[in-house]
Image 1 (cartoon, rainbow, N blue to C red):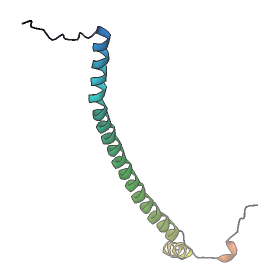
Image 2 (cartoon, rainbow, N blue to C red):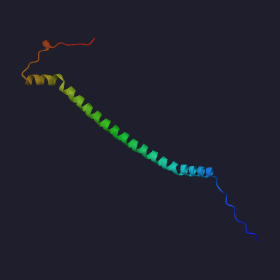
Image 3 (cartoon, one colour):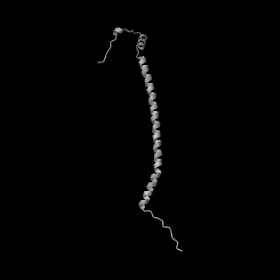
Image 4 (cartoon, rainbow, N blue to C red):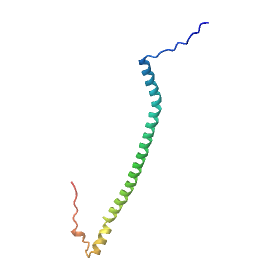
Length: 99
């Protein structure tokens, strides 16, 4: 009886490199995908935080503009003038218009 040994295929050096690169790509693709999705999620969270800060600041700005308009009203000016001992004389007011 003759024993036959199973021949093992030898891989060439170039084939080993190709298989290694293929395995590396196969393993790294899901890792890169998870990493990019995590970064996108983190960026979205930061974006929402900035939007919330902008909305809060817009509310503060609107409140301050209302306060400015209130303080610049004619009634408030007359009240301050009266407190300072000044009188309101409509004849001394000059209206300036832009042209």
